[in-house]
Structures are given as structure tokens and as C-alpha cells.
Image (cartoon, rainbow, N blue to C red; front, side):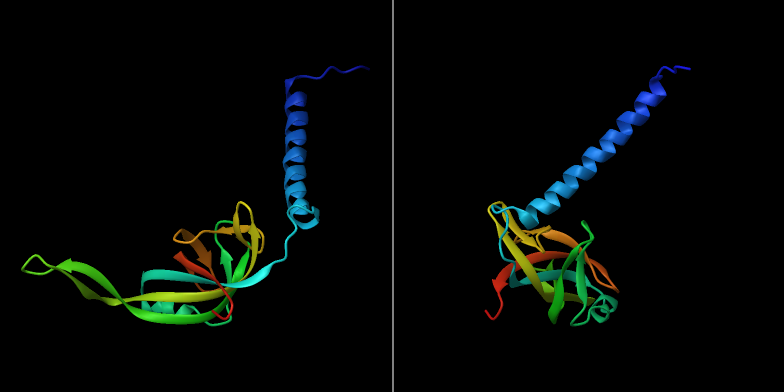
Length: 161
């Protein structure tokens, strides 16, 4: 008995083909980074300086030297915390004379994280582990085992500077 295809059969076939194309493109992009001569570059260890503004004591205590940092957007490994500096947080206010002053924000801190990353320099940008793009003065979301935070990338420097 010969059966004709109806519209549901065509939708299922189209869906399966679309999934195969998407997976093929993802695999092609990952393998082209690893195998092609144009994109293959050595990963260089660099320190990425991240600045976290106005966080409470809990956030300060949740970060430890040696913790792995992951990009929250891509869920890929970003680097390892090398150094943590904690500073008091200040907010700009106006005093009675109308002058701008900086006042200590109660129970708030600024954290400067130094994260050691394997960085891949490409013509179109700098990428941590070849996947997560790093731009100076841009905000990114990151996570560790104990904290999800948003940070500003302040600097990308060679190790030892």
C-alpha cells in the first residue's frame, strides 16, 4: 500500500533537517577554531582585571583565591581567580552647599578580581578559552561555585605586569 505524505510528515522532516543543520554548523565552528590554519593560534595566559561594584559582605566572603570563574552567558570556563582586592565603596552625594562629595556606602564594597585566563587573540577580538569574548570597559556576567555576579572588565594584561 502506497501512502502519501501529509503536511505533518513534511513538518517533521523539516524539523529534523533544521536540527541537523544547526548541529552541523556548531560542530563546524568548534572544529574550525581547533583545526584550521587561519584561526589556529596559541592560547596565551593573561590576567583579566574585573571590577565588581557595590556588593555586600556575603559576596566578598563567597569569593576565594583559586575558584574557577565561568561566563554566565556561555556557561564556559573563563579563568581562575588569582588575586582578590576589597575596597570600601563610595557613592557621590551633594552636601548642603551643593558641592559633590564622595561618601562611604554603608556595608558595601568594591571588589577587584584578577583572573588568570587562557586568551586567544583573533583579528575580531580577544577570547577567553577561545569562546567567551573579552572587551575592556564592558560588563559581563560571571559565576563561581558560590556567587553569580556582574563585573566590568578593566584591563587585560600579560602575566607579571
